[in-house]
Length: 257
Ligand SMILES: NC(=O)c1ccc[n+]([C@@H]2O[C@H](COP(=O)([O-])OP(=O)(O)OC[C@H]3O[C@@H](n4cnc5c(N)ncnc54)[C@H](O)[C@@H]3O)[C@@H](O)[C@H]2O)c1
Image (tube, rainbow, N blue to C red; front, side):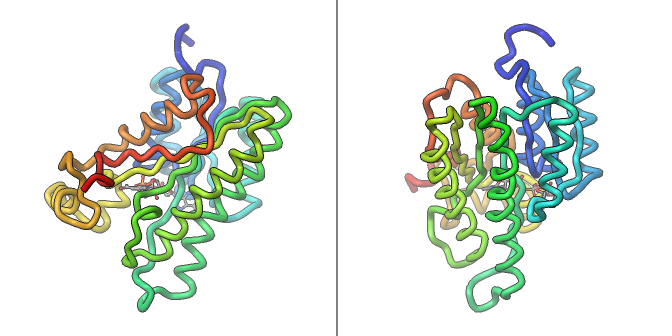
């Protein structure tokens, strides 16, 4: 590994690493020298990203993981420890956007969204933190969303899960600070990924959403996955060594609109 990379000798686990922001985060951390477990329910996608990492000359492996299942999460951790010996960085990116407003939302949709988007990150933290405690260092970044901060009934379960994950970060940040474990949140605004393309199929539709809706941003842009991935990189790096319990909004100023 070339000298001077900011995450040299670090080991990272990125859930949801097969697609979108998670994929770009896995590639970005690997580009800075981290060895990366790409954990995703989509094994084929995770293997493809692990292949991209290897073709960059870095180390990466795919582990099929449904973050809502503790047995899968245990396997994710075991396979990371078996391959790389430790875990320094956990990025909880995996999430689903399902269910609509209160009147249409089903109990099953609520349960599934909360299971993946909130219970999943909690299970991953629960399984990874003991390894961080042993080495008295570690960094966790949880992916929230502007939807967790700006109320909109349209995607109720998703918004509630994303609000709660910021509280999960703050709670764990407070508890784990004495053990030199930092926990932060990145809250992206509208970003061009397979998740958003499900609702806004073309670049034009996405752009319209970014500039003329309740989440409009004054910079008038749709972000690329690299934008939140850069925020994750900052938060897991030593440049942020005393940053914990914070939410970094990467949203082209949508709060200002
Ligand atoms: N794209 C946006 O505009 C946007 C905005 C705000 C927040 N976010 C957040 O960023 C994160 C990434 O979103 P994205 O847009 O890249 O989505 P995406 O759909 O492109 O990627 C999500 C990944 O999570 C995986 N996944 C889903 N359920 C899983 C499970 N149970 N276990 C493991 N993996 C699972 C999927 O297979 C997929 O690879 C999410 O937490 C999302 O809520 C995205």
